[in-house]
Length: 469
Image (cartoon, rainbow, N blue to C red; front, side, top):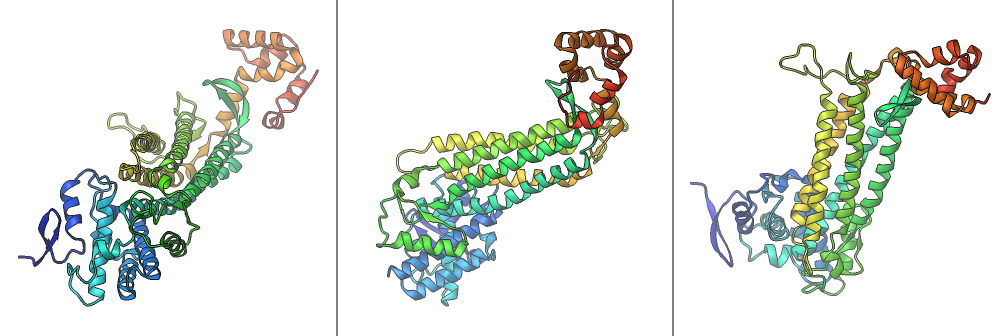
């Protein structure tokens, strides 16, 4: 039989396997919340942030005289071990749980307490020397410790996501340069519009992503204001004078980001508006990425009966029955990931709306939605870069022939022939299958071949200038 230790809470006693650093309250959480099957150990940045919170609290409590220096030293040691990732496997609470994150907070309290006990020369569970609540959780509540750690983790995770997203901007910009002289037909409403270059199309993708990167950076700044020191509802009950300011100062130094204390701790304890704005911005990015993937699938459609303007890298056979078929599987999987992120925006919205009075108890599902969205979308973006964008090639001759055979190029004749005459040419071309050139130059003799060559030169089609009679 594995040796155990007996722990108790006000609900009763449990035998805890002695090798575990978490205790009875975490044990109850494992029994109660088997929801996603994803424990917080899968979010190492969250665990690291929890460690930062507990270390800063211990240092502030020591300065304020709430705990003695030996206890603070043990808590800081335990926190440093957690920050270093040495005890990630001990964080077993499900990401989605009832209790506004209390199980997560107690998970870290118990782990740090037991690490600290061993540091002091005691056994796990000998809480009379170092207690999860009385010492590790001193001057805190789940209601300030959990959201402060969540905001730190989310900020750090967004840093990584933005770097990955910037890689997609760079990849599209490089393709824009590579394809800058590839003439093709632009389209509106899936109908021929006017000529452009494939480079301009890809450069526009880079530009739109760059805009969203800036929006994400702006939204990320909202996470820097935290409610650490608010304790239960923002009144700072059980916290010594000056503790919130000291704690946040230590926390900013430990994490290395400019955290600030909210000026209204009661408001900050219930408000989840920052998450709504960030998730909405992330949804905006997902919508744009998915739209681009739709374009890539259209532009590569064919190979004989579609647009066939670009070739996506062939990644796998596309059919179990149709030999030689290759599908655009990378844009497809990115589309599906974007759909997930778009759906999680609604989850965050509803969870934020569901808060009542002085606390929003739905933060765990907000954390789950935002953590997974950032992870999944980051993975999808990197996959899109590595397995699709960098390997795209252009069917240059096909693109050019599509332009010159298009009826849409008649638009360039408007300033010379007028809209009515140009529309007449378009109508005849559509009806007879003749080219615009054949009708306007050879049959109706409305313009000379020399003028045609000027209007439809590659330079003028790529960079149109106003040409008159």
